[in-house]
Image (cartoon, rainbow, N blue to C red; front, top):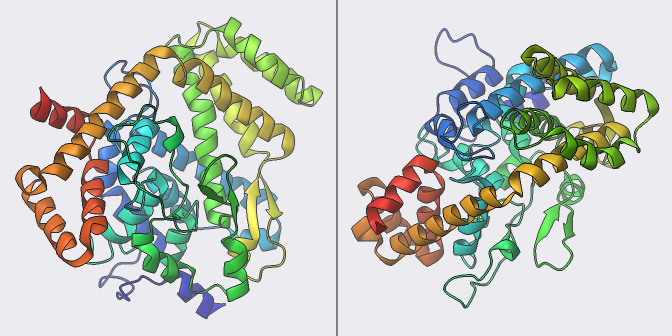
Length: 430
């Protein structure tokens, strides 16, 4: 057990466990590296759903990540009290859980998923772009903590950040200069081929058969892309915390800002409530009264109660029963009824907030800005890029060719905040 523990606590650099006198465990050190990183700070000026600056109430990527971390810690606490001895032995340290939740969105580019799709379009033929893949790249390669290994996090932390532990398939560059619609260019959920060595290092402790099972994929219908079928135990907990934070807390934003009213809620949610057991349906009908109340503390109570529904329902399931490694054999899941409810909450937010014309018009504008920024830097990198990025671009161009050079451009633009991207666009084009 000791050797296995050392394997998952290892860092790619092989660095000494700690500085003299440092009594923190490896997960506390990982959490600190994430919390003090530039990539984490930039989340304060990155879109969650609605554009930053339009209302001072709703969440940014930073506040969303903090709330996800708190929910992740609650999930650990719940399972520590309700789980079996084997479950408790498998649970990640609470600091590790918080580290995963704090870091899970740091790869998202400016302007949310709209920006992600725009960058993926510009990177077709050069490895594509996807926010989770960029998170893995930032913590393992880019963040300036170690000369070569980014934050140089432990292997188990890196495994927990791998929502999609497979490599992006090759894609051809589109023939047209500008897309008529970006909707068909949504990214593959995968790790970039540029980071294949890092992925191999993370998965090195797995047996050949375990790795083959863990990296199984589904090919998406009417699409050349694929999606990984499996994730590790820690990643399943992180994703569940993310889903709860998104489904419940973004619902609160939608109600408070007036984007979702009670009649819309009823029309959308009643078919979903009909699928729930009687006790859960009755509880949600009671919480609905509070959710749309004008009394603030009642609405806050409803939000807390909804989070509690999901946290207290969490279960551990064997998702890859034929594998040897418990970290990939087990996942945290929600029972069917709670999963239907959570998916419903996410869907109502999508329908009445994300999918409304005003938000989609802003998304279109933001995507156009990123497309034009990428085109400008791609056309004249030595003239327009900042000095440090220009040096990276020149090195990549000389040693890796166009694909490696394009990845440097993508890293630069993906790292921008919403405010910085808009400022840069105005500087270049207005």
